[in-house]
Length: 265
Image (cartoon, rainbow, N blue to C red; front, top):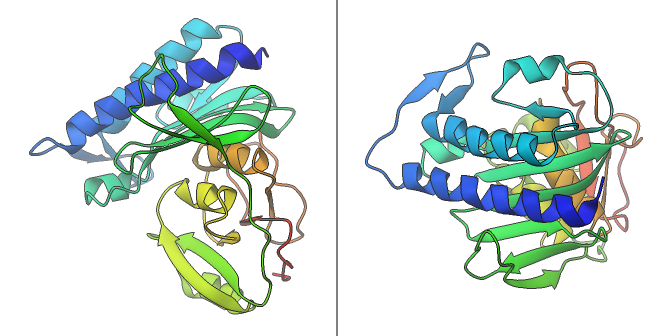
């Protein structure tokens, strides 16, 4: 894959999808439907998916594409592919809480190599550059003109005062029990893949996820975190979280800065 070509395409499509999402988000009303797994889906999910999938297939016709909103793509097999969640955090979107993102990533040999996470309602954009370094962009988010970018890197954690971020919509007792194994300075909540990005920028040190996620939920944030010097491991044995699994379902995991003294499950 030519990353000099890939990264601008992913960034542009995320912005175009984000603009469409915000048009719907700021409208008076929008329909909410239920998918076969009882999870919600809106016209914004579908419109953003159309923009991204058409754009990726046009630019990279020979690369496998997996996207949450196209069930047929979930039958794909392989460990190298593009993977999309056009609107991660649909519940946040429905309740107009703002913590939703557009996620696009490229996975090679089971590892997220490049990714973009765009939070249009929060005016935050994170992506991995062609050289692999993750950055945060500020500015007008023009599709074909990159604004001001700042390299991001994980923090050097103080293990006597760890900063933790956890899910806003899926916080449970098991998560709290694990968090309580640390000496916690502060614990914050965030929706969608923003949690990975908060670790990537040093705003948090660790994000434990003891709950169901799919690869399209995590790949882009995972790529951003890797490009900022962080890592993501399985919750049970601390081995690397890999992609291209049989059903694209993730085990529980921990995203963290390597200076954190990880506790056992």
